[in-house]
Image (cartoon, rainbow, N blue to C red; front, side, top):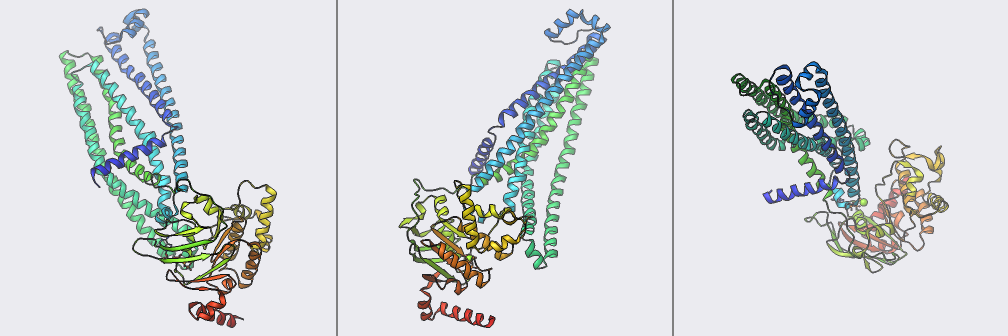
Length: 611
Ligand SMILES: Nc1ncnc2c1ncn2[C@@H]1O[C@H](COP(=O)(O)OP(=O)(O)OP(=O)(O)O)[C@@H](O)[C@H]1O
Ligand SMILES: [Mg+2]
């Protein structure tokens, strides 16, 4: 990657982060303000200690602000304090209390900011993922996306709520402490002024080196969670093929690799921490040695030395924090980039002035060629007209591109060449939501959401329908999909829960539920992608007859490997290796004595045997 690209990427990450911060920024700013005020209260305490040592215990002139001097004079000067030491104690206790209150307010504001930030991030990312094109989802692994949405958003939260606020807080506290130190003894301040940049510089150098190790760890965590996720969703396949041990080993190997990477990273971090300790120890030592020397020589009061040592102890926290936080921030950069990848992926956009025509005309594929990648063309110059209101059956060997044809009709992928029209209008110029609402598809692999049967069927219904109409359509769809008996066999009927932790439906029941869900849509174009493969021939015929009655005037496409499912269609197309090999009515195709006739012969022979 060139420097310019890296710069651009960093700018993008910052812009994405800025967008996420909408609504939570104010909390963080408020929090940091409280923290700074709290630091100021704390920083006054060593001054009081110093003054007490010099003026109350000793007889000298302790450093004190004119404001405090005024108060002390009113109380009767240092002598009066000597008799009433509780006043000093009270002052210190009050400052301590105020500092604690500020710390509390800082934490509350910061926590509110952090949670608001996470909420916004989750909402924005989820909404964006919903708008991404289908092809994006096909390209990206689910486990990886989930990791970006969970552990990466968490890292970003920590980055802003812990690290960024700490950097601001620590820097301001460091600056203030140094100011107090310089005002206490400018000469002695040279020691921290020289050593602090060395500590911070060292940690910055270190953080640059460690960034790539964090990236490797993250990538490997993604692979690990992907294995786990695949095993959870594919648990049936794992059991059916007795792959438990293989999967266990695969997981263990990856887990070992992941652990090894973290151990290596932690070794780096530990070395850094240990060497950092050495340098801060050096700072304390030098201040003590030179401060004591100055006291003995009389160029510094004892009270000032005590105050100075207190300030020195106070800067160690921010300096060490800065070192740690800067090294952790490298991880956040990676996470923000990983989230930015999602947020900046191009949404599926409708063309300008997208059309929403009536979808009742002929469906036409004109010289449609397509491949999932550029090198391998899958469909070659498909020309197909499906007259409005007719049924087109599609038969073809597996992998010949039947489902792909449906994806293209639904505009899930852009067409590289050729066009698809409905009623003469190019689908590329239509609004995607309009197109998909009007083309009801029963997918080859139906996916049911966790919810009741009723909820799953009603998914296909528009929102504006009255409840009565909803029920009527659902009942009608249940009859068409031959689902009544199944539903009645469940205790809770339509309210039976399906999907995760609900009743598990059989393959055929699932398919019929998917058909019902599609039928309720009343769409002018219907597609059944191998949707009756898991039901017996008799139910298949029943459903088809019911559909035929209901679908009068609907343009439909039925994809199937079973000729009996297709033979009554107005037109049958045989797809072979992405080309239309034959087309016509059932009898015509039989006469052609080609692929269709051969498949028919095999299937009728088999049925004869079965009978
Ligand atoms: N998302 C995808 N990315 C890349 N290749 C794909 C994708 N989906 C399908 N393919 C490939 O495209 C080819 C055609 O797939 P398609 O699903 O259209 O076949 P099909 O005719 O519906 O087969 P079947 O009868 O088995 O359902 C197959 O070789 C398949 O591997
Ligand atoms: Mg298919």
